[in-house]
Amino acid sequence: MRVLRSGAWISVALLVSSTAVALPDASRVLAQATASKSVVQTKESQSAMTPARALDALKEGNKRFRSGTSVQKNLLAKVKATAAGQYPFAVVLSCMDSRVPVETVFDQSFGDLFSIRVAGNVVNVDNLGSLEYATKVIGSKLIVVLGHTSCGAIKGAIDNVKLGNLTELVAKIQPAIAASGSGTSKDHAYVDRVGEENVRHAIKEIREESPVIKEMLDSGAVRMVGAWYDLDSGAVTFYEN
Image (spheres, rainbow, N blue to C red):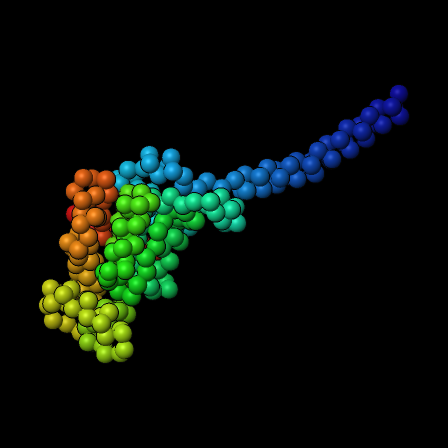
């Protein structure tokens, strides 16, 4: 009987041991399966999105980014899931600065945002056409004009830089300088004041120079907001008025 009991205990111990090994493996398989699922924007989810909800999604995304809790993404799965079509819920006109990757700072991914990037987030006919395509054709519900602290293009405009085609680009920032009073590119507060004014000027230009977008803004189908990214903290402040 003792032998039998010992044998039984050995069998139980082996069973528990094998289960202990199997469970983590099973958990890993489940985690991998979950990670492989890729939630992307669809025509239905984009249609259900309102401008207000789109803005909230960007606010929540930046909050996650700043807290270090960005959503883990299976990027390859998202590549495959969006290959057949795209339905971004917002379009962002931002500066080309390498320290302001739009999808990252808003914790978004493939298929979520249109991103138009140009030095100084200035408005021209090309990005106006791109904004019209994003909203009128594809159905994005929100336009964001995103500036950032310590912008090199703003400094260049303040210094009245002359360099090839850059001369014409920074000239587009001159109205913001005129509206901000006098100052120098060495004054960080002044540079940021001009940058924020430049965001507001861009919003005004978009509305005035694109009847297509103005109609959608007036009807409430689309909303447009300014925003400001802090290079030091990673925080985005929205100008909703």
